[in-house]
Amino acid sequence: MALAVRVLLLLFLGSAFFLTIRLIVAEAEFRLDPEAALRSTTPSPTLSHAADLARLESSPDELRTAVSLNPRLSSAWIQLGLDAEADGNLPEAETDLLRAASVDRLYVPAWTLANFYFRSGDAAKFWPWAKRAADLTYDDYRPLLRLADALETSPPRVATRLGGGAPLLRAYLDLLIDAHRLDSAREVAGLLAARHDPVDRDRLAAFAERLK
Amino acid sequence: MKSFAVLILGVMPGLVIAAPPVIGTATADGAFRLNGDTVITDGTLTEGAVVETVRGNLWVRLTGGARLSLGAGSRGKLYGDHILLEKGETHLENGIGFHLEALGLTIRPDRGTSTGRIGMLGSKRVRVSALTGGFQVLNARGVLVANVAAGSALAFEPQAPAAAAVTHITGTLTEQSGHFLLTDQVTHVTVEVTGQGLQAQVGQVVQVTGTLNAAATPVAGATQVVAATSVQTVAAAGAGGAAGGAGGGAAAAGAGGAATGAGIGIGVTTVAIVGGVAAAATLGGLAATGALPGQSSNATVSR
Picture (tube, rainbow over the protein chains, first blue to last red):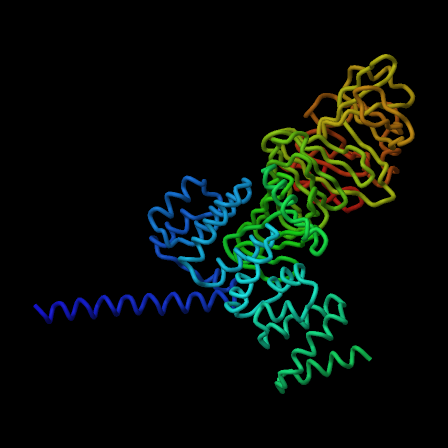
């Protein structure tokens, strides 16, 4: 009896472990190359059905049904939140988007909430979610930086509020240079230079050359 | 939806100064491009935002109330009241106060409930399919070049600037208080026709080639005045073949290279030219002819 329980327990833990690893790998693939990940995705019929329920063209009723069946379906919560926002119901929109973030601690709900608070003009709530999204960003910081930069006029403060990590500073520097905002870029370059990371030597040298 | 606009504009006075105006949201199944950046799932649209899809659709909700979607492989520049479609196809609904621009053409719904698909056909043509309600198509100068009725689809190809005033239309010539009117069978645009020998053609299906007289004010019921350089009587709608007429094809051939003067007839491949824009039904129209005025083609079309 005890042996059977142990076997069942091991099977359960093994399945959970496999599922967790699979989700982590899928998430990483998507972050690194969303388009390739989309191309290679072959969801199981069950997952496909769940995804269908949360499709963007679904009605609110269908989405509510989806989240009642699976409260962890963050994509459906996000869609409900965006629908509510479009209908002018900001409290419900916020509730739904926060619900998405509570069941899905990855990038997308944080990014969506940062956008939501940006559109709502709620800077106090924007920054924590923007910081969280920045912490979870694997590759492209630029969309987030564009939002943050539009809210805050001081580039060093933008960088600090978003965590000030080296990858973020590099992306911010490139963004400002591309936008021909060289004075702002100089401030961010100063932050990057203060880190004394040899990796940044060429980037900073090229920028300095451009300033001459 | 109105409350969405009021809400956005009402609660973000601080943003109006610091940030570009928010015009709406974009949502996708997966990743899409927003101002050149890869964005996942959703993003905030500001005035002049460039959106591009790779796989799957992109749904856009604008604060003004318009809703549209972009198909896979589409790209457009979004403003609060219009989209500049550069590639692919868009589906418009709730388009009141909203219009689309492509290849210099302006495509606008004739009522708020109009829904339709507007897509690029290669790099030179635009297809407009009206699903519910109708759409008006105007050229770069604001001249009405077509009324696309619900349930129909037309393809458009702007001609070279030198031929911008060229008009070539087919329909029944009528008289109204001494003015001659013709509603083109392809574009459903009613024009006032001026020229010699028109009285004899009243009541007949004719093909008129001429130039737009932008300085003239059309009679009520018409949107523009066309000075005819060629008027040809057509035997019967859909029968094909020209039955002679006052003018001849030579004049038409000289009008911006628009007409061949040979094999003139109306049928599934009829091409109209209004305000320097060629238009044809997409089934057997521009797509079937393969080439349009100024291009080499042996297709028998009405030009």
